[in-house]
Length: 428
Image 1: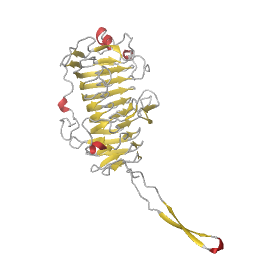
Image 2 (image 1 turned 60 degrees about the vertical axis):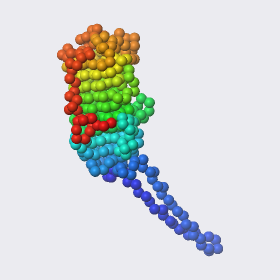
Image 3 (image 1 turned 30 degrees about the horizontal axis):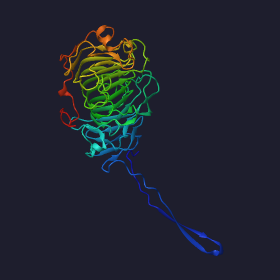
Image 4 (image 1 turned 180 degrees about the vertical axis):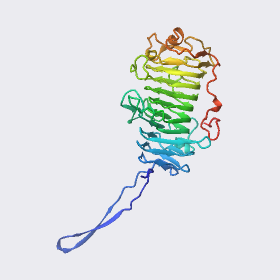
């Protein structure tokens, strides 16, 4: 089946109808039937437009630049193969790609020839530096464990994902390597934006390695459930959270460099370097299905929040480093709600460091918030769990360093930052 949009113009057909009237006279009345011309494409003529539905296996051609006029849906059972060096551009802000459960995308680039998902404005040289929201983003959906059985992707509720069992936890949605995502994050409606990379119920058989996400109106990466791992991640200028996980996600995210530039909010809990959540009160104490990503070798230069925890969520931290220049709302660990500690799922397995270049941090409310953003009256806060009564929640094997450079964080020189052929930062 052809998976590219083909525009065919039909010639008008001229038909003469001969009518016989009274008295034997003849008259001929010509009638013209016209096929309406198709609507003009919103994609530039230099782009090869992908079909809205890809229903059979398709391999793209790296010599072409592809356009998406709106949503492009890779259907279950189909594999989309994207060769190294290929560029795919969203032609409108509402353009995005969904790889639905049971489908695969194999987009294996190289450092010399990365695969680029971006906006048409960027392809045409019309995008300003750091611009976000020029197209939607890339969505991978799968059937791996996720709280609830009928999960709907928030920016497109026709996309169902996840399952309440663990049968599909090893499922593969394909392979993304040396992939650059730029200028993403269209707001579908209030509080429902597309992220640079959305991973919904994606299984551990999926490979995500050396991903660069630059300029996003919402999160850099948001993960709902699943067991997928990420090795090598650069998030630059995500205006909400840089890494956000929810709904029972458990996987390893390692070798991560975050740089915040423009953020929605500069308080101590929104636009966080890391945000972890479940749905409110759905997880019981010590539940093995609580959200608990394993964050290893991570450095974040932040202007918003540091670690934001909410609704029974957990995390495992090892060699994690935050660097902030804020002078107000300086707390770098913050609870949204009072039930975070109930699952006992937060652990410091290795070094964790907080460094603030503008104020003096300490083992007090300058680093760990004494209030919660949703349950302000509660006595269970980051300050009580991390300082006043440590050990209730925290793993004992690691150490926490306040205003310290004891942590190395990620080896920043080793992180691919989106530029072809080098680990140097891509010009913004």
